[in-house]
Amino acid sequence: MVKVLLVEDEIPARTVFRQMIEAYGDGMFTLVGEAEDGGEGLDLFRQHKPQLIVTDITMPGMSGLDMLHEIEHSGEGMPQAVILTSHKDFHYAQQAIQLKAAAYLIKDDCLSDPELLPRTMEGLARQAVSQDESREKQLQLEQKVRASEMEIERSTFLNMLRSPDDEAAWLQSLEAAQIPVRSGRVHALLLELDRSSLRFSIDQQEELKLWQFAGVNVLKELLGDRGPNKVIALDKGRFFAIYAPVGGVAHTPAPPAPALLEHIVQAFTLYLKMSALGLELSFGQGLGAQLPELKKLVTAAYPFFYRSQTVVARTDWAEIAGFQHMPEHFSRLWVKILKQALLEPLRSAAALEQERSSFFRQAMEQRWDPEQIKSLYLRVFLDISHFTADSEDVADLEAAFRKKLEQCQTFHDVHDTTFLFFRRLQGLQGDGKTIDASISRMIQRMHEDLSYPYKLEELAESINYSVPYFSSMFKKTTGESFVQYVTRLRVEKAKLLLLTTDKKTFEIAESIGFENYRSFNRIFKKETGVTPSDFRRMHQEQL
Image 1: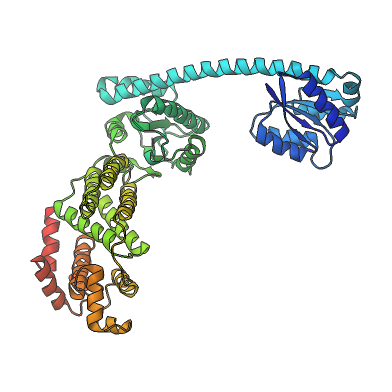
Image 2 (image 1 turned 180 degrees about the horizontal axis):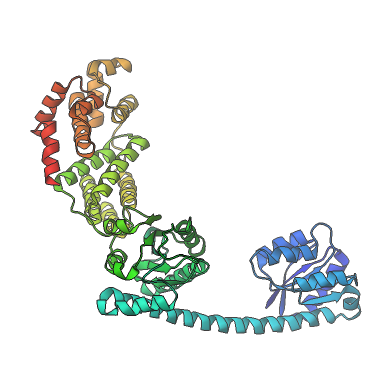
């Protein structure tokens, strides 16, 4: 059935043309809509996507020719058009021809020969079906060719990754594609589908192949006007593309085209309905000499863990591909900090974000192993979930969290996933505490500003509580006495500042609310067993 749209402002004429189409086109045509001007016709076209439009030229508002002009420039695909007019002015016919109208009929001729319009439509419909069949066959052939090319590119690239003996063959394939190997500017893209945005499991190979094929086509389309290029689909939804910018001059360093990576990521979202992580790599002179580093980067387990959507110079490749072991004392420290961040009542979003930023900054600077970061967050979640009475729901939540954590590709995804599942855990636990709002605001203020010398009596008076009642409510909310809580908070903050900043110990003491350095030194040693200076030195020596 060929979908037909009829656009005619004169109701009697529209009625006659409708009857002609319906009487003659039984089994071939289906009238999907009628419009009385080009504007309404344009809306119906967008809604129904007809293959054939029968339209008058001159109408109030938007004309038929203007409507066809809008359709042509919409990118929707131009339908076949039959132009109807009562004017024998060649000027209109000329415009219709320019818009690739399939037929131009005089209304009086159609009325004197009731079969003229449907007969013309039938011929166009058969022609459209034939064109569709040819287009489908051509598309299938092109897809087979592209799939074959894609497999050849992938095979050559994977052989190069596995064996030095096959490096020359891959470099030759680049040269054959006019991509310089020994000189000239070359850029590459490393992309990976964001697994949190996938509508299928990454382990479904047949499904993944379809989307890899689509991803390769998107990349080829976007890189086509950049210069000679190659695009390779790798395992687990990863893509590698290399291109030589048009007009690149040998030995002349130049930055990549602006916003290319951002444009590609947006295209994946728009056309594939999936997010993507990406890095753009800049190559120095002599790609062949850089293959060992390139191999490490392309095969790295977590190339996007700390950095993505950015341009990476060759000097940064080793950092992205390589990671360091996270010392146990840092692991213990951050487990404690994150557990407090989750368990403290009514922590502000700004305070939680500050702790995320501090952990991310230190982890990125030290290049801590992503698997250890994942294990740390898993440990935090499991420690908290163990406070919940055993139930099948909690066990299922833990299993779902482990599975989701395995799929995380970036630090921030790990962090956000943990906090999301913690909120679900809270939903299973229920709200077993009645938290005093004034005390909670006080705790929030302490977390945000430890520089103030908080006193129990002063705080109790500020909210019109007696000291005993304030102490009782504070312990009910936090599980600790006021002095214990503030002391622990300050010592933990001091540890973090000692490990992550170059501040002097007396500056740290002042910034976290100690009245003098001696008091800070004494309390810190009592809580940790060592002085602040010794704590910093011991941990620096372990790095």
